[in-house]
Image (cartoon, rainbow, N blue to C red):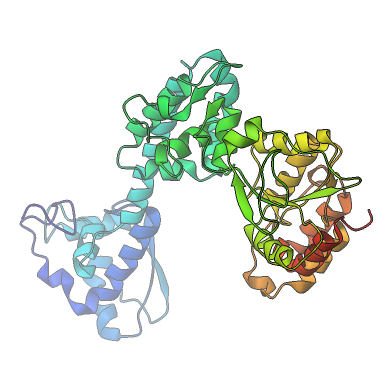
Length: 430
């Protein structure tokens, strides 16, 4: 017999029928369990602990294989696997306990352990291949990648497993390092569509190649446009940008309740109108807040001015908002109470030091938690990951509260007070 579906072929010319008696099923189940646990499909060395079954016929049937007197029901016996293997050779010179157990259960043994070994070997090979490729990167890219810790970073973000699961992981890794090598040296910049000359869409958002490049540079999880901007790479400048309600570049005429998109091309070159005295522009990250604000603006005589970054702002977007402050507008910023939202607020406060957090304090978080309708057990957020005071420098107590609660809270939970602030034209007293 060749090509056996259950063993490596050691069953060839063997007389298995007596060994596959139903009375011996308990023995082979014990062997199979041990083989799966140890990752050893043959199980010819070491020891095996057996517990006598309740059925006396089953215990008696194993005497010839185990030697000695029959096991008592529930008693334990340690069996030398080498001895069991020797007794099996009467039925087949190459038989092993694992092979017989595989035939008894009609499945291969230790496949999961073998798969784990294969996966570990693949990951090790990928790590070594990446290390060799990264060693040849230009200095300005090597500084960005930090090759000494890159594999650890890939593992922590789940990208090592994603890479191993690709149809040709080595080709993808080579391709990604090739893209890294093509990154421009500051202050030069490059068009993302030109980094892979044979395919202008190879680095489109969501492709494995784009994801791996960003993961290698420590930017996995960052908003793609913002991540590429950090690398000196420009995406198309007609999509993305910010949503605007009631505040628009100089020279634009837009209905008061109309929400328009200011794409990167416009944000890079626009100037802002001079503000009325003590006028505020609010900044949010969630389109749902913007939609509610537009509905409010439709029935309001007072201007409602709101920008929405639709997630963490890029450097270009943050700079455009900072220019609002330079023009004289007062800026109030907020986001969700989660790690991404905190990073969003920090980004804007760093780009625009005169801006203030908008309902982003400890008490606001507590209020938002109280308004949640999602049960605590089904919520996901910071969880056990500790936040530090530096994560919320505008209110260190907020980091402590979020770590203690282990839950996020989203802008929509504060929608009513946010709309009230927009209608009043200013944030609450700081």
